[in-house]
Image (cartoon, rainbow, N blue to C red):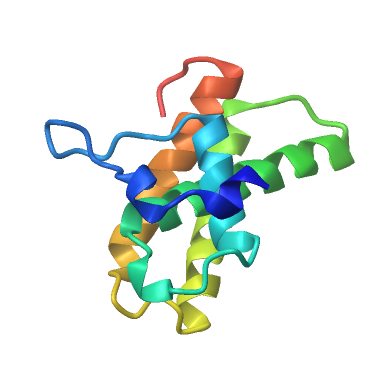
Length: 129
């Protein structure tokens, strides 16, 4: 599995202006594989951006499974609500396990929400968030 060999330095999450650069679906899935796949054991090396990319990807995955299970079409307002809930739950889960005490919970949640938002727009098109 390629993601297992990806180094953390490949996931520098800031653009030249210092703002978080969002990961496209492919790179977010690589982050997801590192964090959720059990391939990363040095939790202290995980950055806010890496955790946010993984949690944002998981939130989108959960959203799409919900749509499929319920037979729903993508809907912007529903996406906003569900993604916020899924992101919050995922970030809380990671912090409650005590893996990322070196990170700021609120910053991780904020970045993960922005990442999920970006992935939603990438997949389903524009729309003001």
